[in-house]
Image (cartoon, rainbow, N blue to C red; front, side):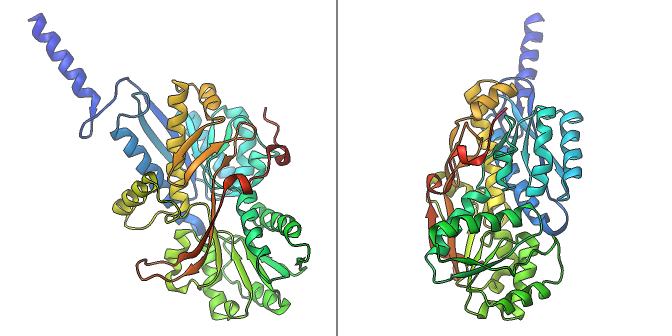
Length: 407
């Protein structure tokens, strides 16, 4: 009887380890990830794409046995693009859900409002979207990491493209908060070095987030007669701007136009053939920029599951989960301080390519993709043709220049 009971207990234990079609976890417990993105309002699609990328990575990892034999669990909260709400959401995830690690943040303004409190919460955060240099610069701390392209990297690439055009007089249209103003600041800084002839106009436009009527800003820019326009609007704001600018003939004036986030697939799907061709657009990941098996698998798996090509927000969230997995496995533990040490200097391959997280400021160094919008009957959205890929080392300022002093 004792032998029979022992056998039954062992069988029950083995069965309990098998979860959802054969995923076995060698040890008890889970690794909890808290995730905060924008799930409502003008940028809700960005949050949705990030959620999909993150869930895809979690499902893949759990099906292959988890991390150190532990299953990954993820909890989502909406930041509403507002720093106080985002901070409350993060505190809820840490204190009520007991998450071990944090992934997310879309808005630079939200990131600037949240990052200083991570020293109080003592939970590592992997930023996947918010691009302000400050969070891996003047505001840096040992709990904050970024696995995606920041403003410095993306705008330095933009300046290199702008320097090769004939445009001399430049203006900008960008959102009226940290991201828009810093994008313009760095564009001027980098382009003036590459092209000393470049001039930056006093007539600029910084509409509020979620502006509905862009016509006054478009009219003012057109009346100023620039040679080039650098646009840092994003998400629903960029979609609305382009639709209205098309009707007003903005793209028929002969300007050189650069859109720092114009190649986000969320934007391209929303616009389809309303996105003008021949416009230079940037992105933080482009699904056709890398022929590696890792990227091919991601694009195919994502499209099969969700029916669309992945955006940079989807890839960045997906990449963050795999970077966290690599760091935990490198550390051999889920202890937060050990994982922080493992993240510092981590090299990992993700769909975007190889990324390296610098120990000095916790900023990822990775390639930056830009391109000119073009029509291709094989795709339902505009693609990048020609496409220009800038090496991460070439467009990432050195640590000493960032102002980061890790504590």
